[in-house]
Length: 401
Ligand SMILES: Cc1cc2nc3c(=O)[nH]c(=O)nc-3n(C[C@H](O)[C@H](O)[C@H](O)COP(=O)(O)OP(=O)(O)OC[C@H]3O[C@@H](n4cnc5c(N)ncnc54)[C@H](O)[C@@H]3O)c2cc1C
Image 1: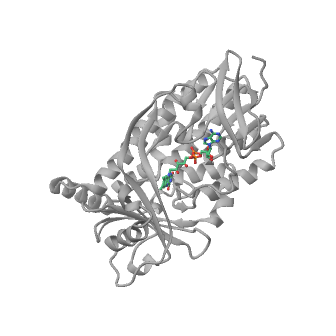
Image 2: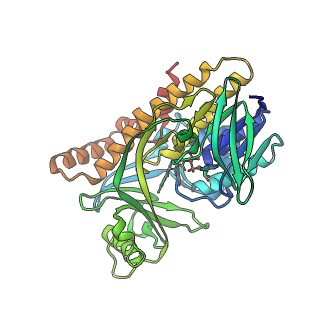
Image 3: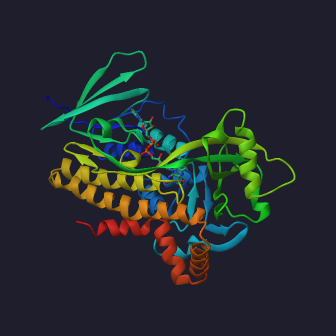
């Protein structure tokens, strides 16, 4: 196979764009393919943790997204209406340059990254172009792509990075298994203009409830003043066209009963998986982000850990391309990031959901006591936030050689 020296990135979500930006800035020829238009992506992720903000800051991205988001130092944990624990990320000062969370939806981040890649002549982002297939030989990769109504085209490159999300074509065509499970219920998001801060809620709230757990976050949405977004479990029957509006009201009223109906400004629902690819690398094909690992949004770790993949992979890719290391650098990427996916992200997000929905009174009581103790003791509070903000995961991964 005659190869072009370029790196091909399949999928221009936040993770693919981040890899493209970092490689492109280092002078590498990169082509990113995305089946959509990038400027209208789904605003799923909103929470960006301190560890990720530090990384984004290293590459000049933070200063561009901060004005688009909401700075949130505090996160609260409730048991129904009872406030169990309140944590202020300020306690992480000295561990991070950004001791707060930025609530900034992922479509905004993608638009910023997309705009930044446009300033780099060696980065080509081809929108509305679907990757249909991929293959590799000893010295290169080849992808088959197609634009709407166009003929399939074959593009050669040196390596292929699969950042094409949950249903990754790259992962499937590379025969990499995606082990784990799918939750039986869906997760619904419901946005309302009602200002929950008037009811004493912070911008970020996790609410455990044996009847129906939920999370409540403020997002900037179309700009100040922003809206609150509730995440709650939902059955497919509750989502039929004739029932969905009533379901939105019911979710909000269950969480915070009011005499008046809520003003619903947005709603959507998602199938939620807990899965990790059996490997993140097959020869010249490497996976990152949701293509490599999926988790529930409780804890806000999917995009964050995907961005950590992107930075790690780009750095190792540059070592290989610059001749400083052999392809073993990619295996270190896999060891480090797969460890984080299984031992940090999967472990935390599975436990978070169990805690939110726990019905066993004794286990619930244990959780309540642990959360209260953690919030009252500065040492435990810091340990808690080091884990939830993914700082621990990066430090742990760095120990893996
Ligand atoms: C309700 C909800 C809330 C969430 N909140 C958070 C949060 O607060 N914080 C957090 O860290 N994570 C959160 N997540 C997870 C987060 O959305 C994902 O982890 C993140 O989108 C992963 O980014 P990605 O670039 O890997 O994949 P994606 O964002 O899915 O991007 C993949 C891209 O690939 C493109 N693509 C797919 N197939 C092809 C193909 N064959 N050819 C070309 N292009 C292709 C798509 O068009 C898309 O642009 C949340 C998820 C949900 C569902």
